[in-house]
Length: 182
Image (cartoon, rainbow, N blue to C red; front, side, top):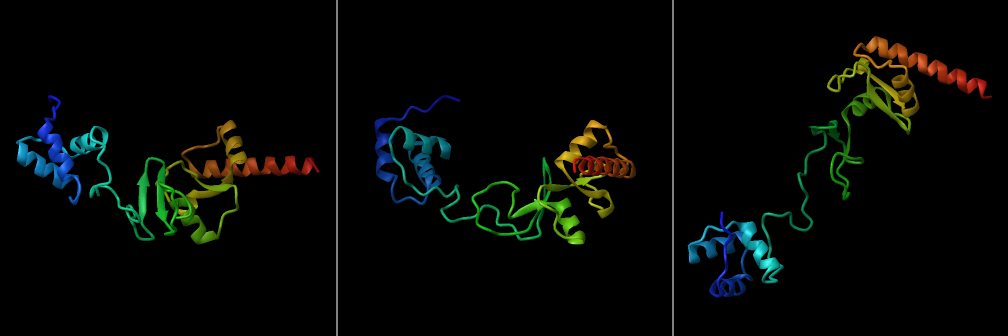
């Protein structure tokens, strides 16, 4: 596609009609109809901003100040590349993505519903390694130190009972180390 070369008449038209429009879509439609072109909204908007210095028009394709993107109800469950999350709050934070305090990992939610809050610094793991198996018997709470020991010993398996046994061994080793240190 060939780059559009704006004439003096077209530039004057944009300067005269920029203000007072509901958005760049309306201005683009007017421009295309008047000059028989087929320009895209973003092309015209970029030209107005960068070449003509015309700014400040309301762009209806962008979130307006005070608007909320995807105001989902509490209890909404969403899957992402990193896991499954549930919406638990509507606090006005400027964080994007599935982050506290509005979102929590679904496995943590399931575990906390049954057993109460998990201690700080710990997280809920899947014993069988299947990140879509939210059965309470497949969830366990561990910390990073235990996770490292499990990985070093290669005790993470697809068999939940074998992984649970490995967890008990690591916890026993940690308790023995703690007692010896006293």
